Image (cartoon, rainbow, N blue to C red; front, side, top):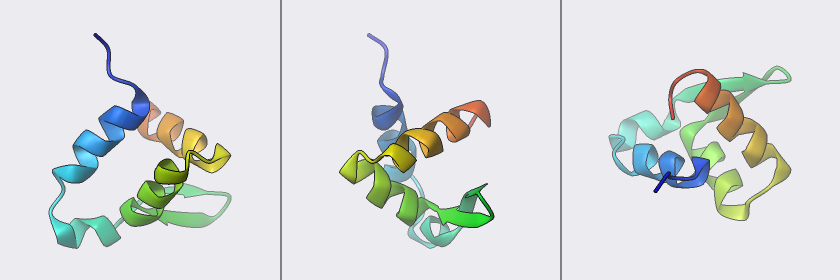
Length: 62
């Protein structure tokens, strides 16, 4: 059974050291997105979260 992008994100996020969660993981429209901001977006299942998840997948992070 394949994991969704959200499930893959949470798996990676939950295994991150706490101090890395403040790190920028992607920049969208000149706005830096940290792990914590990405998690807030994924938690709310926003349009931005889908963009973030697709970018992270494209970068090989997920």
